[in-house]
Image (cartoon, rainbow, N blue to C red; front, side):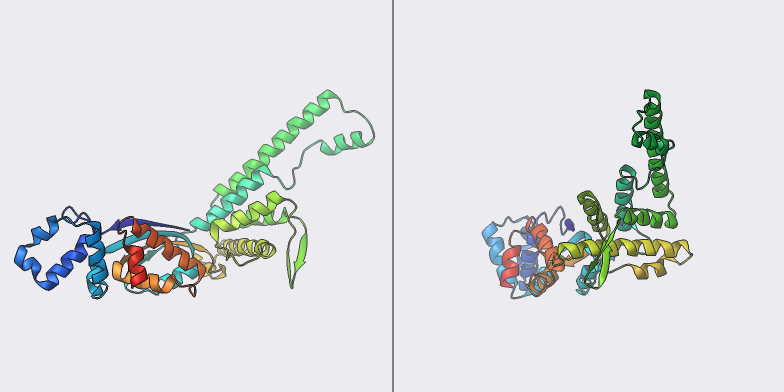
Length: 317
């Protein structure tokens, strides 16, 4: 998950957005009519004065609405984004799940990268005959060993080329087959409660299984490790099923019905300071779910670079 503040209220005349709050107060009190707009635009304020103005502004919070922020938020689950967009006094543009498969394709790329270096079955011409000789106690000739090494090299190159071809094809059926090959390479299965999960044949296999799933999905931190392995498999199987449906002619907007809400998404969010404080009051509570609490913490941390008083405002509001 990543949150970045990409824009905020700023202009040549108002080079510190905090000045907008002061200006709003002065407009309300009629002071701008008395001293003129330029007086307040050009006036310098100390950090202590800004702090005092902001604390007073909490009594009349409409003046905080003049400060506006735009955030780019990526790598959160759609569960989290559904919670976020419930705050309706904000504007949102979310990555389309119909036209973008960016996160799922990252998972496919991770799988293809692993498979290219870890072939499941490598057919090497002459290997069977070579092994028969070894088992009989016969010593293969240097020429036979050289020929076998060359055959192994060519078989590995062919395997890598086939994996790369599947990845670059853009064919949903080929994407599904990559997941199939990968999961089959994890060998046996084991029972976990009332479920059957893969028995990973190596720590490297476990790592890639989880990392591939993490490219596309969010894992709740409360899930124990053995369940996480099963959940990672479920996530990847949902991607496989998605591409299988597309390969059979199902439109993408219908195929996505098999994808869990844990799928990652990205969005652009524009919100004013008053609403941001309201969101922070609700979502920084321990009663809020961990993911949206983390998002809002990052939003507040980003705003702190522009408005150092933000933590005080959250606390006092």
